Amino acid sequence: MAQWQGQSRGTPLGYKIFLFLLNRVGVRAAYLLLIPVSLYYVLFVPKATKAIYYYFHNRLNYSPIRALLRTRLNFLVFGQTIVDKFAIMGGMKNAYSYEFDGEENLIEMANTTGGILIGAHMGNWDVASQFLNDIQKPFNIVMYENELESMKKLFDQALKEKKIKIIAIKQDLSHIFEIKKAFENKELLCFHGDRFLEGSKFIEVDFLGEKAKFPHGPFYLATKFKMPYSFVYAMKEPALHYHLYASKGKINTGSVEDLVEIYKTQLEEKVKKYPLQWFNYYQFWNH
Amino acid sequence: MNTVMTMDEVVSITNKFLVEEFEVELSSIQPDAPVKETLELDSLDYVDLVVLIDSHFGFKVQQQDFKGIITFQDFYYFLYNRVK
Image 1 (tube, chains in turn purple, yellow):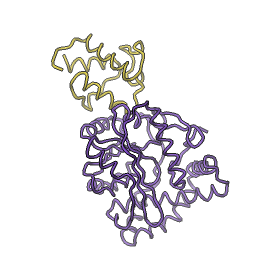
Image 2: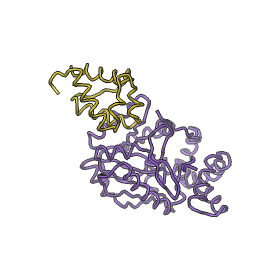
Image 3: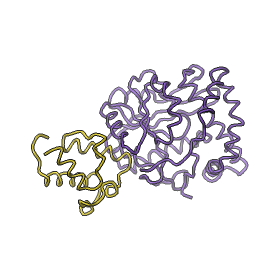
Image 4: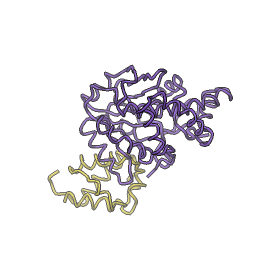
């Protein structure tokens, strides 16, 4: 089975330090600590730095200096989204403001057919559910086991309270039955649509001017089971504000490839609007 | 599905939906061929397979059922033993 080979470098101790700061001092204190921490990542995680620099310089056509500065900022904003995740899931939601374009789309799906929500490694989409008070059904977030394990432990209590279920894609195929059950219960299933893993099926499309691989699975499930799909984002904006987006639920009547094309087109729009919040820290394009 | 099925019927029904749903050539579905590689099953494709079994044979597959299914022969026997 294909597996995510990337590393989650944050340690439980690191997370606990941030949690301590969050609880005792507040969000902005945790943000301050991120300044040296994010610089460390820029300097000592060269693969990630190179990947993000490539994105800014080669795909968004920023000058070398601007691309470098933006790379530094990208790491900082990524850290802030993680802090926000802890804060929001830990019960500090009221410290944040938010606006929601398309909340009614998710409510409609949740109350009728269920559906597939496709996000990306952009912004902080897994906190979106925390701002949805009118949806009683659980959100099933489907993720690769290696990618989520350390976070899951820390979020466990919050996940139980907030009606979030994480479905880990595992070797033992237990995820199949959880996904099937969610379908049968007409629940919402959330996937990242932008992370292709070596060894798994992919669909290659032109993304920001260069070929890139997108995962086959989420788009296949939406198409095959004729489930309404919605593209969802929770983008960070200044002053502890989030802008959430959910497109109207639609059923794909075309091919899986057609759906990937639709996805990548709107993803390009979001990337251009929020360039600092692209968080795929690996060689995304086929260069 | 309440009627008793023969092994030939199980093989026929199975091959038909595999060809239609997984877009593979019938000739590639050989008893000793590996299921996963032949159908190019991804981690999420198994959801489809489970739903197809449910709809064509009328029983729910359990997680442990996949253990021991390597080849199509294994797969046919598993299905046959559940519906015979």
